[in-house]
Image (cartoon, rainbow, N blue to C red; front, side):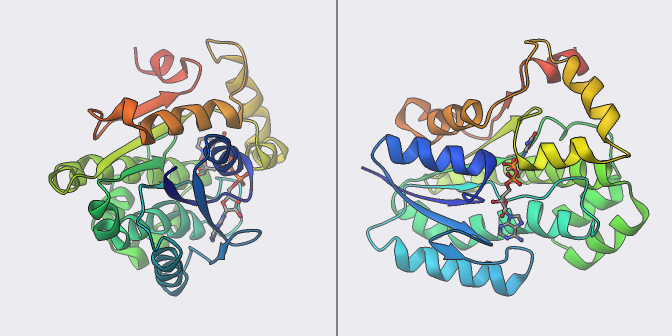
Length: 250
Ligand code: NAD
């Protein structure tokens, strides 16, 4: 039995990851803004610090892995929440848990997106990678929701790749998955959006494997990357998207 911490476990992909790890007999410490072992708002630095402290306390026998899954979609009104939750709500927790993970030679899986390679705002991505939260949030005022979202995932993935060697030297494997369109509350909300809804339906129709992803598809991939079968995989982004990224970037 291993001990894993997970953000975003109350819903969608995170809930499926939590269930998968529980089914495998592991202990799961769930962090979310609601319905979790540790309730914390990852959009603020206070919430992130409180979450880190509570995970450290709950994982008193050591932490074998961490999954950063909490996120908000492109449809939300307050676009500033996208960099706050999707980027800083993930990387600050990874950094805060670094020593604990190193002690157990643990693994981290970030839930990125297959939108990460898509076109976005380079200054926004640079601000995120520079750790300038105020600037990144400010930048979203001039951006479309989709660019703010894909940029947050691009920065998250690049952060993972840039920091991989340092973590690997401490015995911690960093990897990410890039889910494609997956049926969850988030994607249902985007489908209802008057701006993005029609485009999303066309987008889903072009998935090469001809079906949307299910949260369980993502959970299987995360379980693999966390586990010993992936012990030589580090710094990778695994697209779990029915072939969509390969279609976009042949
Ligand atoms: P979801 O809305 O079902 O789940 C998101 C979870 O994050 C919820 O439990 C929510 O409470 C939590 N959360 C949101 N804001 C938070 C905050 N401030 N503090 C703490 N927790 C917070 O969405 P989902 O589709 O399951 O998305 C999970 C992850 O997968 C996200 O990072 C998302 O960007 C990514 N993703 C989803 C899709 C998709 O098509 N659904 C595709 C690519 C990537």
